[in-house]
Length: 112
Image 1: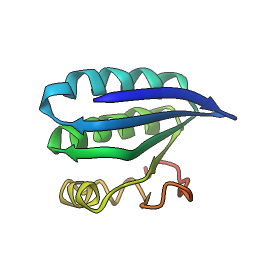
Image 2: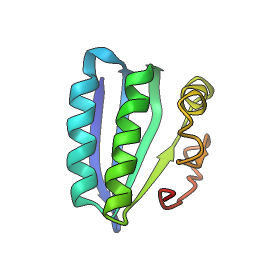
Image 3: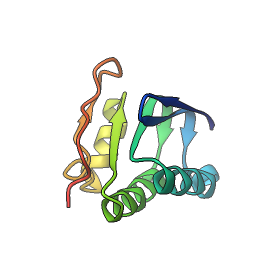
C-alpha cells in the first residue's frame, strides 16, 4: 500500500494505491482517523487500489462514524467494480454514494 495526501481547496485528498487488506489495515485506519478528525471534507481516492478486503470496509465504516459526529463529509472517488461490491456487501454503499469515474466524484455528506 502506498498513499499520498494533499490539500485541494477546502478538502483533504488521500490517494491510495496498491492493496488495502489485512496486512495494512491498522495503518489505513490510523491515517483515516487522523484525516477525518482534522478535515471538514475528506476525499478518498481509491482509483489506484488493485485489491481490497473487508478490512477496508471496516475502516471506511469507522471513518463514516467519525465524520458524522463532526458534521464532516467523505467522498469516495475512483471506486472499481470489485471494491464497489465490497461496499455493497458491507452495506456501505448506503452510507457512501460512490462514483466510479475519478474525474467526476460525487460529493455527499455522510448519511446520518
